[in-house]
Length: 285
Image (cartoon, helix red, strand yellow):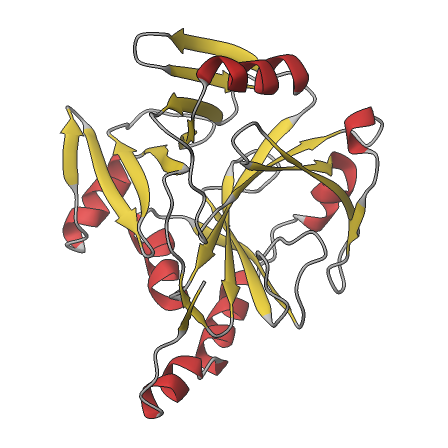
């Protein structure tokens, strides 16, 4: 399964300005591309919403060889209730730790050299001290599971992920498709996994020839490649997207105008001003 790639994690964001500040200024990621859509995604990329929305891809490098974040913003939605499903993304970057301190972004040292912080909306990030060369600064995505063995059977036996680590005592496991890719960490919890309204989605690519990618949904992006995706769910309901690698590489090329397009979209978005003038809160997801 070495031909499969870990691509990105999808976050729903309510405050696009502060979210962009966190990823750009605190983490040091770059805007790789920004796209605006007039109606909801056929594969529910933006959640169960039919209106205007935007997608911003941010990362430490091009999507061809870096795990990135997809920030989906639904116009008019200011907040999403968090569940216990997403447990954090770990980033190895001493520079991010220094920038967070410089900008007085809240940091809590949870173990030696590892600091917990939050992106706007409450999404947890763990920043590790690291100064040496590395293929990608995004180390792992951690998701909660209610039955570790059942989840391992799904992710490893069915989806073909290699198990790199397994700790029965701590009820955790680390999986991935390749040594040099971002890993998926499964952490067992007591009770059910609650996705609430903020539920995300993890995406992978695989060659179009693989049977798992029987084209179920075609996604069009104006002026860019059309990709075929299939959406799956693991035993706890975590959404998983598989997309054809060939078309996705064409779609995901870095757009030099991406950052400018995001800034222009934020400047043109007067929804915060409208709600403030009418003394009404934005809707919650």
